[in-house]
Length: 346
Image (tube, rainbow, N blue to C red):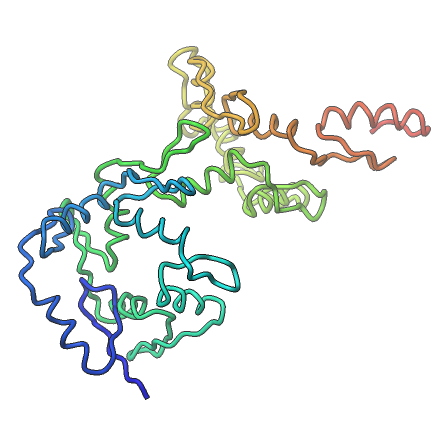
C-alpha cells in the first residue's frame, strides 16, 4: 500500500508526496526568501517569482489566450491555460483538456465523486490535497494572508485579493455591452444575466408570467395572494411593498424625508427612481441592447425592448388562446375578440 504525506505549509498548494519524499520537498520551504510582497507579506526566493505574484494583486487581465480570448493576470497563467487547447489529456466525460496526466486524474474525480483526502479533525473528505490544507485552517484558525491596509486577515490568497479591491476601488471585470464594471467576476456574471439576457427561467404559478430571478417571482406572487406584509403604525393601512408604505407615511403622516431632484425639484421616495430621473435630465442611457445598437435609461426599458428580438410571447388571450409579445397588443385584441364572441369586455 502506498502511503501519502501532505505538505501543510501555508505557502504550499497542499502537494501530496510518497512516503519518504516529503523531507526532500521541505527543502523548498527552507530556502531563503528575501523578496517580500508588500501587499500580502508573502515571500519568494527570486525577484521573478515576486514580480509574477504582484500581477495577481492588480486584478488586471493583461495576458489573453489567442485561442479563446480569455484573459489572465500573469504570463505564466496564460501559458498554462493555452496548453489546455493543445493538450493530449482529454476528459472522456466532458471533453475538457487538462495540462497533464495528474491534472486529468484530479479532474476525473469531479465526475466519479471520489474524495481520497480526509480531514483528520472532522473527517470531512475532499478531492484534492489543496482543499484539505485550506479546510484545515478552519480548525486551526490560521489566517496567513494579511491585508497591509487594515487589520483583516484571510485563509486564502484569493480572498485577500478580493478584499484589497475594497481599498483600491479597482473594478477589473468590465461589461462588454455597457460601461458597467465590477470588483468580482460573479458580479459581472449576475449583471449580464439580469440586464443583457432575456432568459426568464422562473414562472409565476398563478398567471404564468416569467421572471429572471426567483426573488422577483416570489415578490410578484404577493399580488395574487394579496399578502400585505407592511403595516402603517399610525393607521390600519397595509401594503404589499415597503416603498408603498414609505410613500404613505410621507403623504399621509408627514413622516420621513423626500428625495428631491436638484434640477426640477420633483420629489421621489426611492433613490433608484431619483437616479433614473436625473439620467433623463442628463440624457445618459447606460443600458445597451445586446442585439442592436439601441440604448436605454433603465433596465426595465431595456428588458421591454428585448422582447422585440425574442420569439417569446408572454401575454395570452384566454378567449382564443392567441399569444402576444406586448401587453397593449393583447388588450386591443381582447376587446375585438370579446365583441366578436359576444362577451362584454372586462
